[in-house]
Image 1: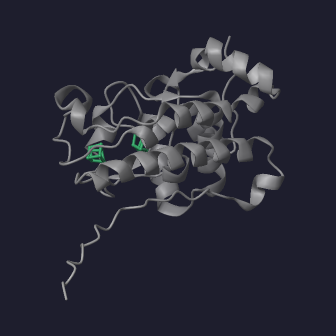
Image 2: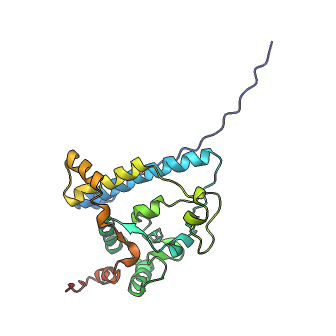
Image 3: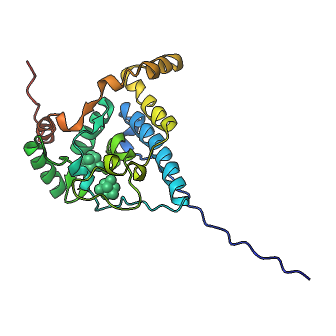
Length: 220
Ligand code: SF4
Ligand code: SF4
């Protein structure tokens, strides 16, 4: 009798994404749009990371690793994402973290680390922008001041464009674009991309004022 050799099965990493949810969703029409967009993006990111893990690579990003948040000074944010950050900070942040963030928003200026980075962690992690979600690095942590996109592009995750585009499309209803054909037209023209701002160029002092229940002055 011949003994068949048992093949060792390689375990494959299957990463899953979970949709965020907040009890306020029913009362805030834009909130489900943003959470859907983040869920779509997170699913694409999980699938793309899973593929690379199964190829034997190691994800370097982990909680407490945050030099990217001090190095990167161009972080694109969509209008709905800014609304989401405002809401999350004003409504959800509490205690010492809230006070620390308010101080950082007031002191924020050119050349500084992202104002939402508090003690080495992202204080708005559930509502961090798509750009931050998409930036993932493999094999070794970034050196201080290193942007691996330029130093070792092969270690930086290339997110799946289909998920990226679908995530952006999920935000279109916020801009009154709901119809399927209209959405397609908007995606082709990149209408939303024209409204993207750089997180580092936003006047976050206005958010600090809102945190105190004060209205920022109207711009002339
Ligand atoms: S991008 Fe670099 S610095 Fe940021 S979490 Fe990943 S490994 Fe750490
Ligand atoms: S929003 Fe959060 S993840 Fe993005 S750069 Fe700022 S601290 Fe880092």
